[in-house]
Image (cartoon, rainbow, N blue to C red):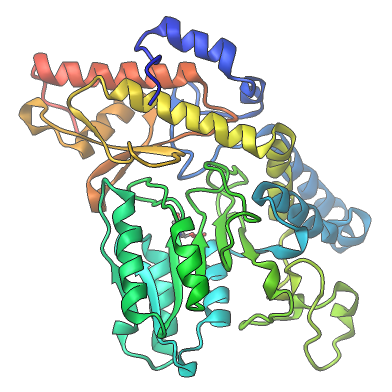
Length: 429
Ligand SMILES: Cc1ncc(COP(=O)(O)O)c(C=O)c1O
């Protein structure tokens, strides 16, 4: 942590004026009026380009129905999205695609990589993993008629991200010949830790274990360079830090070494576009990007939203976005460290796109859950309470969160703490 941070508005203004090259983008976003928005990890806000794209495509659909595919090149949106996603992930366009949701992407990858009959029966995950990934893995273990114990759930720590990696390395050591897949989030959705998965790459390569990462809480938030980080595959969400809209499509990535690999779950849209309507028997996989992993046709409105939203990231430069996110999160952490009642869970993470805290020692036993509700009801702060581990999370969007917002958030947290330390109110809940 830099020593130069200081808890004053003057310093926040200095950061805003000198450090924030992305501040003009804030105007492009519709943020809840009179509120501070720190829920980027749940749902990114609407932007002008996404709104424009949505209205434009609705208009095209209204006026031209099915001819929209031809007249407005709706089909080409998949190439535009793959192009931008590849830039954001620092990979070749050929190795990215999209899936209806992140969980469907996970099912597609598990159906492709998990072949327990060949002797590798274990899937390894973290106990604290977001449960949709775990449910997906359980279903594939069951589908293959394997024992539930074939899903190995590894202990984690809420404060030290290295514990998870150390424990996975121990499991690799004990079961190296029998592990098929290690699947985990790059950034923990609960504790907001960044996991140093680089430490897993070499042992996994040595023992031919596949690594599938979940980027739901990391893409658009922390640095990801998939040309450097040699994982096997990844699933991702575009609705959170990438702001493409609620229920938006997920992204898919496969290492270039799998360019000949076919999906375990095939559908007609996995074929070359030119032959889709010929309806000839037999599956002829597309050779372009990850189209061969697509199952069904897509919604050009949704895909247009992703394309519009990603255009901001490509224009601003994803490295600038993630660098600013690190600046914002570290700034909030250093401010919160001046408050003894606040415990920061991901203080020691290498990278942070959001901040997870617990609040303790307040009068009348105000809990973290009540604290989050007071922040929302009284101070008009969007953030969320993660009940499973009793913590509050603040998510940052570098394109619309400013250093001044962070300072304003700190002042509100400080205010609620001091009210509950000195004036003894019963919180209205
Ligand atoms: C880490 C993580 N994985 C998976 C999911 C599920 O995503 P989807 O609803 O797109 O399948 C979420 C949703 O918030 C998530 O945070």
